Image (cartoon, rainbow, N blue to C red; front, side, top):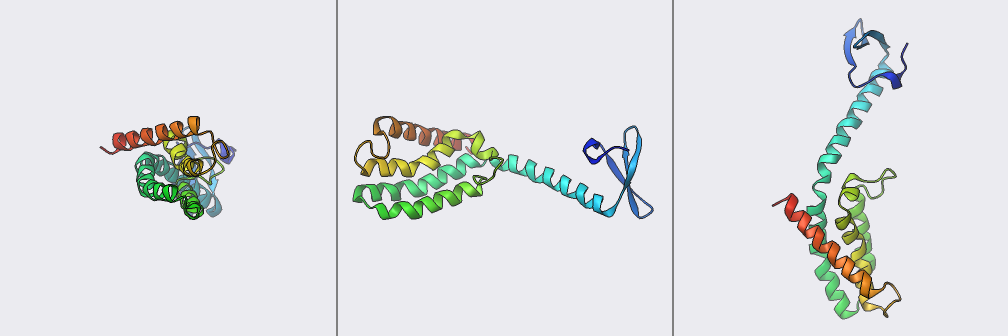
Length: 165
């Protein structure tokens, strides 16, 4: 009798005498208890949610660009005023934004992994602001970090335009 791991997505179920009968292309495999029905339903729901997550991943550049468009002007004003009080609440907003896109997932995130320029722009913009109001070299190397940050922001803007013209 095949185990659960041997079943494939090609398996189809048919109600039979109050229990579910699973048939493989080669013939009957087993009878499925109510607990197994729940397991199969959960597996199918996970597959559907994963497909939806992949579909939503393409929305990440636009969302990241919108986030940066909201945050960057406020950060620029804080940098000009040398106001460090902006950065802690902004860090919480940035962490919440990335968490919405799977940033806290132990398996990673399709959105964050697929668009590294946007991911890096969102995760690094606060460091860039702090770098600009701190003594040179104390937080970052301004000659290398800031141009890379600007490049990531520009690439993210281009990706947002390309995915949502």
